[in-house]
Image (tube, rainbow, N blue to C red; front, top):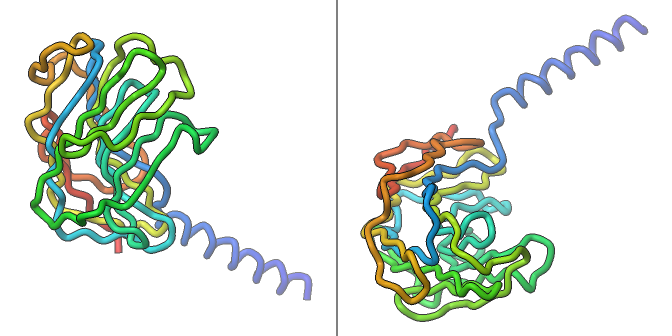
Length: 214
């Protein structure tokens, strides 16, 4: 009986490891970060087609960032649809806002995003030219930072997918209130890391597709 019990336990353990080996879940992203420092970044986001996201807390997101202090842009969850969000800290809802877009975009449509460092420990996200949020930052934000473009996924079933999400006309601001110039060529390119089977169509501007593992 003891031998049978051990064999059964071993079989269950092997099945568990086998299942986990093929289950790729969690967070992943493709990211392009400047080496120089700036006070703002703006871009047009083309909404991808063929979108599928598991309805279990999973999501996809396309956003701009001020270093690792603030990230703002557009995300998608089946429960809420397309959302605007600004995240300037992890520990309190005072630093985070997310709301569904009033007008849900269709595949191929464009949304203009602009993220501004106000140099006073606050940041402002603009959606199509209108200020969506101005939030305090959990960490200090009183000087220019590196800026970034990011396409990301949080996938609990390894089923998220989309085709051709793209940033275009990406510009950066060197000084507060100053003019905008082209996104620089001095970069740190974080090719797809973490979870998600990304296809990288271009890095500057960032353009990707995400393939699901069935």
